[in-house]
Image 1 (cartoon, rainbow, N blue to C red):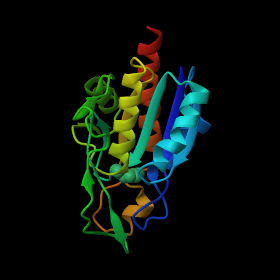
Image 2: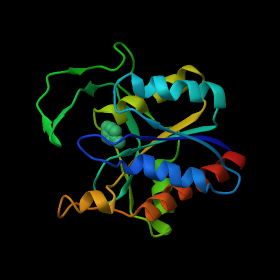
Image 3: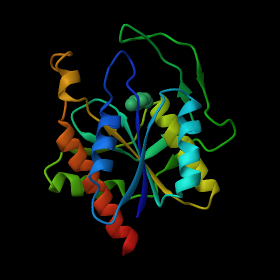
Length: 206
Ligand code: PCA
């Protein structure tokens, strides 16, 4: 199974993004039978997909698994992408008010749902001892934008590749600067992403 596995660059005043760290770790040690191409995407509407599309075109993956930093205590398997985006501005790590709020692709569907079994992926992770949950809202920032554009593109192409987005908690180094914030280690998050790939490889070949 060929997988395009992406993470994002650090944003919002952070120097790390768990998604890029975990994508690199999994690409360096992929599950058996999984061939990975990985990339770190810019956190910007437009440049995110302009970086991902050439890899998609060249590699023709069976699966596009994109990762992003979401915070919270668990790995979040995103079930839906919504046709809405809102620009963000960070000032010293804090969100500043911003007026921009617009559809991603005017006239296109309000939302897309991943074709992948989010609920059974959640169960597989939890059975493996990894905190996981299904989310119905990927937000309105760049992660949701990439997800919406990817599901739209796959839909236009007749449903290939399969696409799913996963939000990750903070890393311990990040949470150490925000006392009380939940986090997971790189190792546990990488194990979770490997578990997802193994589940999907099984269903891909079966
Ligand atoms: N998380 C942001 C954008 C980049 C990232 O890692 C989001 O959830 O939209």
